[in-house]
Length: 249
Image 1 (cartoon, rainbow, N blue to C red):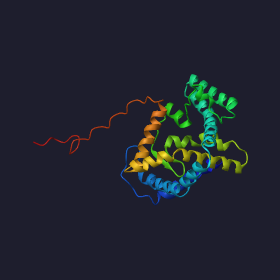
Image 2 (image 1 turned 90 degrees about the vertical axis):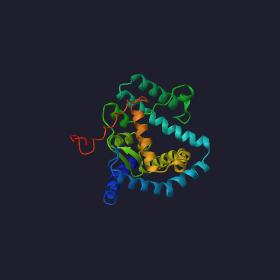
Image 3 (image 1 turned 90 degrees about the horizontal axis):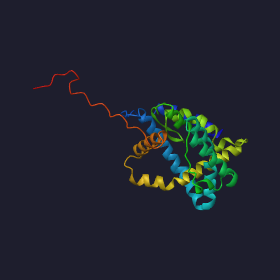
Image 4 (image 1 turned 180 degrees about the horizontal axis):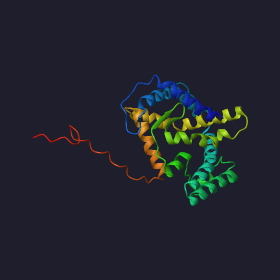
């Protein structure tokens, strides 16, 4: 429920910032850059004021083995959805492997607290509905920055409701329990990204561009299982004066 509410909040906030975002020159794949930068700035401010301090405290107070167990449980739940998407993509062997991974960790790993499957050589191959739609031929569409949720594409945003309906926060029945699980998942994820975001802050001349280009390249790589086709080269600029202009002597 909380994740669904976050999606609605994302749409509402996007509508709000549309009126105040300045227009920027369109970038291929990012025609809404002005709006996206406004949402990106909002997310950065929220992260600096709330998420990063809480995640830092979580990392300092909670023992490593507990944090690892929490992360493993969330990952194990995601493995079940990955198996479904592997099957939808026409990869039965990978689907069976992910199902086996989920079963092994659930039964022998105390609900996924201990990642026995990885030690047994059954690696995680995460898949979501956005990747499945991409395998079915749906293009990514324009790049989108969602409030609270971060970088996405139009295709991945359309797939969010289905992905969220099977997320860990959707499992509890009581709203208070869903809120607690969702909050813990956000903090756990942010804590694991502390070193990464610090490195980005140190090297990025334009953090927005670095994250955007990295995200789009990673998603393309994920859709094609690490072997994406070559992208077509952009057409050459027409000669000065128009395509039919007569060369000057």
